[in-house]
Length: 346
Image 1 (cartoon, rainbow, N blue to C red):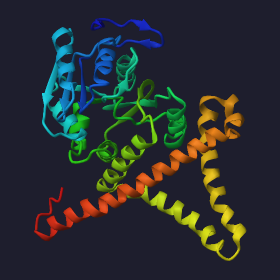
Image 2 (image 1 turned 45 degrees about the vertical axis):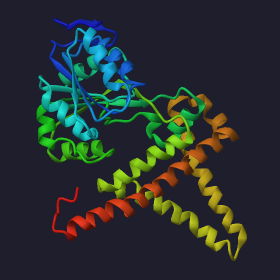
Image 3 (image 1 turned 135 degrees about the vertical axis):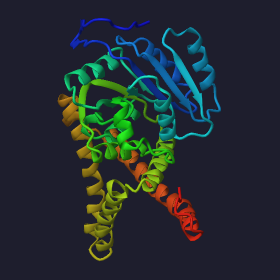
Image 4 (image 1 turned 120 degrees about the vertical axis):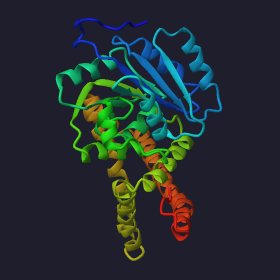
């Protein structure tokens, strides 16, 4: 069990600043399989949080029971807010509002924080004293061949994501200036928050050493379901230009040689070639950053190329399915609200 630090002390490459109290907040729902590991990781931090505040958004599994078990034995105060139906943005807002301290560290269920995670974030906040928010890094867990291929497919920059809301330290003022998190979205609320932070002129800093690991879906069906949700909520958030428009343009490009192939059939071969080049580009970027010696071997691996291509096609299908859901549900609901004179359509 970690204890609060009372003086500066070096550990690895971290020189601890004078301690500041930090509240760690976690929004969860049906995280029975992961919440225990998250809490254990937080309790083993070399820089102990002063409290942990968890908002449960209506779990139907043993999530709350597991949290209560930790409450009973933890030397770090753990607060559980049972909010009924609460999406991630509302979960974060409720937890931050109830947190006792001005410095807030954000993490999620399904995240693995290494022992020095919070220490790195706090140290970065002390190095950049003008910053009101410090972003760490999220790195996908690539424990299996499939999850490595999935990470290659949909995580840029070799899998290092920053800003990453599940690895961040912010002053309460940053949250307030950004207007909090949007509460009606299953995903993309973090992207809107990042934009609101920038628009508000909040000073930001990055900490490349505050790395947490996040879990990927372990199969194609789970990947499809997750990205369909992401796609629908990305549209609800008004972020189509960042994702769906690009996917639509790509498939329009693929359609050109297919149509031309009706008259000159060899031209149709450009379509699979374009798909192959997209796959090879992702594989090249991933291994150039993470394992340069394996680049050519992986580029020429039929198994790697096939799996990455397949995952990409599944994600694209999920993207269009999410668009269909948005068109058939969210647009219709919004039109009804507007027609009835209620412009608060959400």
